[in-house]
Length: 112
Image (cartoon, rainbow, N blue to C red; front, side):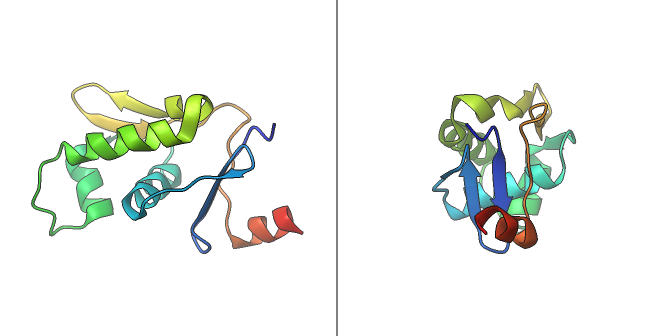
């Protein structure tokens, strides 16, 4: 067991415990945004603006739907890393000793 979560922005690859994770475009963008700002709490409106873009005119609850899908795909080890902050929004809280945010160079070292 790798005990790791890898995300490479350049290659658009996510690995959970060494296994590739298939994410939709917005799921990947949402995860990448949350990983880039660990422990920071974001409102739904902030997430919509950052991930969907300013022109998004739909319901803020679409964030909840994407978060739930993302949690389901992350599996039992990492679903709890996306924390609901009641009446506010969400934050990413990495697991102790089990989190790695990868870039292209880290990915090259990993696959060499």
